[in-house]
Structures are given as structure tokens and as C-alpha cells.
Length: 105
Image 1 (cartoon, rainbow, N blue to C red):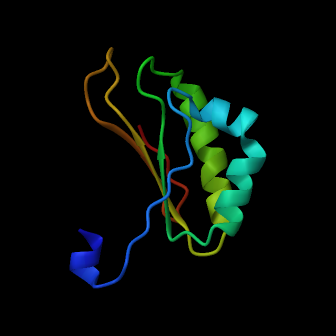
Image 2: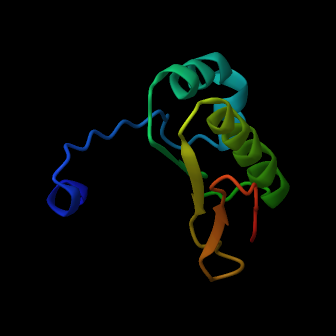
């Protein structure tokens, strides 16, 4: 889709372990995540929290915020976080940041 719209090649990388929360990634794999974000020369970082079981909302905000801080340190990365529907609150919830550090649920 991006390639057809812009004419530029698009490469996608996923830095994730299945069924692991952002809290786990920023704890167990912090240095790997940090290195990749700071030195990967990415244009965008899409953050997605573990969906089932859904983690604590405060953990999602805390650890998405830490990833966004790393993205801010890497020049040119725009970070956007997407949280899937919660079973106990069936609506789309999103965390977004693109330089303004606004997190909203």
C-alpha cells in the first residue's frame, strides 16, 4: 500500500515476542529494544500492547511512554501506539504521539 502510494520501497520489521506485554519487552528485552529503536534508522514505530489477556491500563501507558521516549531520542521516528479492544470496555482505544507527547485513552 505505501509503495503503491509513494513509489518508495517499504521495509517492515517486527521487534516482538508473542504473547508478551510492553512491560515484559521493556524489562526482559530492554537493551535489545533500545538498541533497535535508537540505531535501526526507522521512520515509524507502531507500538501494540498484548491483547489477551489485556494488561493493566497503567502499565500500558507507562511502558508505551518509555518506548515513545526512546523514539524521541532517535531522530525522525514518529511513534504511534495502538491498543486493541478491551473485553471489559468494547471500544477502540488508542495511544498516539507524534512529537506532542499526547497519550489519550
